[in-house]
Image (cartoon, rainbow, N blue to C red):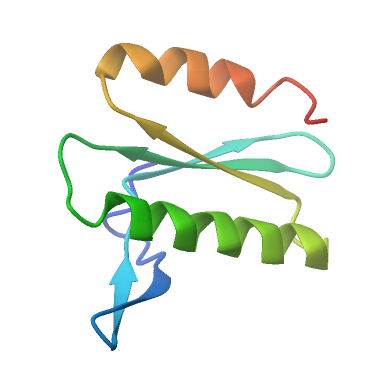
Amino acid sequence: MKNAGLAFAIPYLHNGQMHDYMPDFIVRRRTSPPTHLILETKGFDPLEERKRAAAERWVAAVNADGSYGTWRYALAKKPTDVPGLIAALAAPRE
């Protein structure tokens, strides 16, 4: 689903100030436990690396907690990347 109305945000620090990174999509597989993918579609963004690092820290923290299913983060640079990233959500993580 599109994240626009969900207000799901990941905090990150840039130039000494807190900002909210709002990824484009949240994909949920109905598995037990559920598996989620934070999916960002992006062209050029000068803050891409900072946002990616914040998302990966968030994913590591929520997965360490274990109460909210499994989460992953992926970045699609081209629309043709999206089907493969979603398909990879079904693959077990090592």
